[in-house]
Length: 505
Image 1 (spheres, one colour):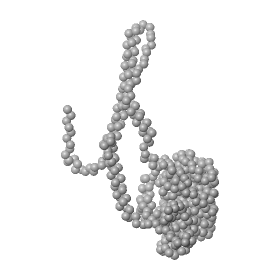
Image 2 (spheres, helix red, strand yellow):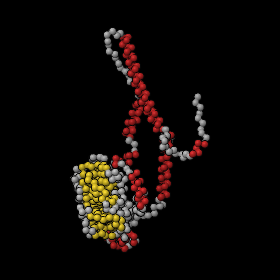
Image 3 (cartoon, one colour):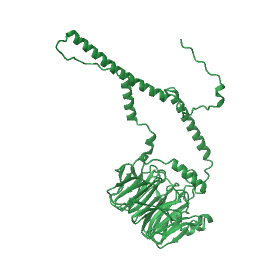
Image 4 (cartoon, one colour):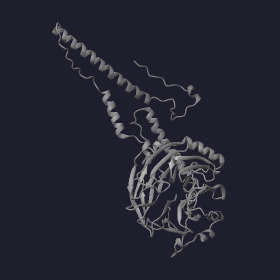
């Protein structure tokens, strides 16, 4: 970068440091690409055949024994079931409408806890990790630990039917059947917002992982986006002319999929609030919809679960049916397991784990989510996440605006600063009051003295303002105590020969 036009040495060093950091990050990314040796797999059918005709039994017979063990079917009698995986995909949480709640390590089939809360359970979600989870029961939201011990009862979340957890903000979000949206900070137990959406019962809700905005689907086909700091929705999108039945956002926060009673599936660009980019027609209205880490789309229609995938071998940029599976009961919940080629399907009669090749991200970042996390790593992660917790005030439609310059305000401040520095003392207009026994010469003298004193006061005020502005500017230019110079300093620097200052004549 050419720093000849940069004003001060401090800003020149900052610009040079940016260049060095960008170059270093590029080199490290290029070196790390060698380590990403894993690639996603997918089903390939012979000519004239379709992958939708391949049953789960055939997939299990032709995969390795580790992957085959991940396909299982649980027959349970307390459905319909809501399901949820942890962020690293290692644990599974089940919540039945008739009170059955179970948490277990679904890979090793190791049960953490199982109980019946003796009242209806409408939704469940994990909190920061597998040690805590929340269940939306009949009247209130209850928080449990991994042993099934009740930790807390959140009575501010009354008759909730949907739950979402924002991992970077430590916020538990609930939607009630009375139309209220509530947010609570689970790290300190403080309520961050409780607003009436005026939309009636909320049964369609999700959150955007990119900006942590809560997306709510209404009965008028409108998707409204909410933040805990604003009483009104941040944005509204008319997606369907009929009520919405399901909504999903991909893990990158780029695309949003919506389903309505008009038997259409629409894909939207959620960052630009534009679309629809694509529209698909189904035979019946989809009741649940989900997007995987690799862009696969899963939807449920009655007791049939379909997965769609883009065929990169052809020029058509459209999704095509990839896998179709019929379950033993109506589907109430579908979830893709992170970093695994698994689709969890909760039904009215239990839970089914389906193998969907190519759905999970094969290369994971251990600092973000580690499927093979040890106990010490989990404890360290809890501490780091709490230290790096993002305040709820930063939730906005465009999270990148936080580190941008507010150009109109900066221009206004600059103009005001220039105006103050170039301002001159005002002209004093004073006319003394005429009194008896006061000569004309005396009145002129009084007038001159008052004008000079007021002019002197105004000039002194302007001088103080200018000196204060110049002092602030010099303070910004000088190096602060925590300034890290571009060149490394050592203890032996004091023995270096110092540059001689030029004598001022």
